[in-house]
Length: 351
Image (cartoon, rainbow, N blue to C red):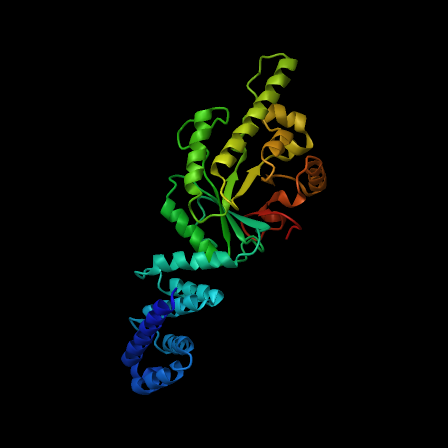
């Protein structure tokens, strides 16, 4: 913002505070004329500080006034323009909490989320799995979801409403959380087939569109994989075809990631513990070949559902043999195993 634009904004804030002070009268702690004179006196040396101090006093003493929302929003913008990002996010959050239906709420949320994302440091180690039937309000603004979770994996069911998903991601950012989307693999009654180029192209298109939202990345479930279709073949041919199919599935996953990826986009892919511990069995029964998957998509975060605690060291060791950084391994933790509520996806030392 240019100095001229900032000055205009500050004069507007002065005028707004003065108008509310005049309306509130002595309830703000003295006559409007005296308080406005004090404001101007302080403002000669530090107009921004004066405006913020007066706005905070007005908000405290004029609860319920019809213009209180405007002052609350103006205060958030004052911190924003001054470069005090943490206080700006805090004040935007208070405005949104107190006045969710205000005409400026949508724009304020968008700006607050933009600022909040600059404060998020690193990649979350713990993600709360938010089911499609679980309302966002159960976790919005409450950090201790899944004990220390600082990210949400949102299972999307039904229509993919871009505006609703954008609002959810922005609300999460203001609450200090990142969002990863788990979209349905298919939008039709036909089951997703990773060997069908049209299905893969359609999925890549939908994910590429969703990547324009303010999200951290995507979650791909085990439904991406299909077992070999060689029931009546000889053992040797069965193994050959299973290997060829697993390579094709890994290539399809790579195609989706390559076509969608943007800088910093996070990918989580679920594979069973069996895929790591008993790769031959997983190849034949699940169509998963961890070696091919790691080779095709080396930057993926691998989510291991259903792994028992005694199995985890062996899984880490095996993945390291394939060149997977242990920090890229995430576990699905059931509610009775360390998560406070719901399901937690956790990496590093478990909570």
